Length: 321
Image (tube, rainbow, N blue to C red):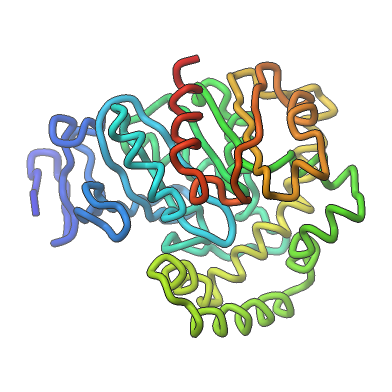
């Protein structure tokens, strides 16, 4: 443990002061809880950072320009375990948090309007996490739900985000305004999770508990460790409920006003997934951004786990634009 009395920082035995010289972060003199070599991320440090609306768990590693990686549902930050080290090796500081409600981040109450799980609230968490680590401007890469948080982050904080990539999604605003039976059949959980609590939560708890009993890998066990906690399950459902209500209202307003992403936006989708066969993914995203490029990759929905080398290469190429 390291204590900096001159700055009046009080830390318990698990808190350390991380300086820029030691980690490459611009956060010298800033204190936060940290643990070296967290599970699945050797050489990284774990953190817990309090934001204005949650407490965010995550890992940070490397040195140099930052990259923020956001996971999808029902996963956690460990979905990036194979990509993050490659970005570190390429000279970047890589920040990999659990979204609020997921993994080991806190699970605030969803409220009557689900606003605490709006993508606006979840994006603000990431602004505050990166600020706590000393980064005022950064690229963001988001898969699945993380991609939806990334897009809202771009719209709400355009001066903060330099580049972005979204993996295997099309905008929720488009999906909710262009229903087709193929989408409903491929993504039934989008509609199941919208039902009033606790029916979907109870169903998920039963299914996840059974899955945990069958799990054979450390990764499966860790995902299901989190997804057999009712707080995490409820938070995930609230995330989807927010998307179909308060998020949709804000998305509709922004779309009507012609608000788009104006930074370089890379769109990647899975050849083995449902998005490509159902939608012209690149054409749709070009209606939501002015500098959009992209292509399919030969993997399934969780591209960062299926083809991590290709995803890392795509991210690094994006950052050079």
